[in-house]
Amino acid sequence: MERKKIYNPESDEKTADRKIFGGNPTGIFELNDIKYQWAYNLWEMMLNNSWYPKEVDMTRDVNDYKHLTDAEKSAYDKVLAQLIFMDSLQTNNIIDNLNPFITSPEINLILVRQAFEEALHSQSYAVMVDSISTNSKEIYELWRTDMMLKTKNDAIAKVYDELSQNPSDTNIVKAMFANQILEGIYFYSGFAYLYTLARSDKMLGSAQMIRFIQRDEVTHLLLFQNMINATKKERPELFTKELEDDVYEMFRDAVKLESEWGAYITQGQILGLTDDIIAQYIEHLADKRLKAVGMEPLYNVEHPIKWVDNFSQFNDQKTNFFEGNVTNYSKGSLDLDDF
Image (tube, rainbow, N blue to C red; front, side):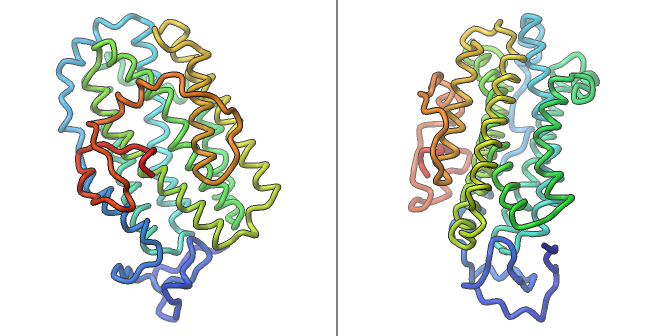
């Protein structure tokens, strides 16, 4: 597996012959002639979802944070530390590790946009940390000093490191699944905790910031789910029993890590988020992600905290992405059930 050429005038690849990876692109973005219409639609959705951290009023949160319990403050800080790591990782991973091997111009567009959004999220966390927390430096050092957090971070980065060290067709597919897991599982116990505070009328600005961030993450999740499903059609020989077993193991490991992390940050002291509820919520998410890429669910559990989904929405507006007008989503809602 070699990186694509950024300028390739010798290529005579036709639109119908394009591939997610392993193609022979010219390097020219001819966006009036595309193969993956879903990718271009998603690109337009991401543009219409544009937002900036300064739009979110954090004034009240400054005072709310002072009145959180010690357990609530500790959880808040740890959640921010975890989110800071993941978006830092993704900003570099998307551009340096994955995009060089993706040979569809319309998907290259989205990956560049995603990297921008991950960087924007890092700015959002900086705003939250610096304006609210009294121990900013400690939060930014938690990825080094908190061994529970480091264990989780090391596990998340492992698959990406494998692609970096050994780029191959199979490792690219595994990286797609790793991205699906990161965008669709690893963020969610932290998000649920912040929405739990908002449900108690605390840290409403933080919850609003997370709504914007989560809406971006949903488009990233959709990107990788569609990439996986398109690759299944283009390269079915890659989806062996061995790969399937590896993917299921990745999901089991992710559920274990995220459930343990959720229990660790809440310490059984956050009303409405018991260890069992967190674990069941993460299992529910894993099943949902597996079904989205045509795989069998592992856990078959009900959604235990459906109110979280309401907190993640901007309004009740819904439409089918593939049939509706993407401008309807501008500063609006986005729900995975619509896809």
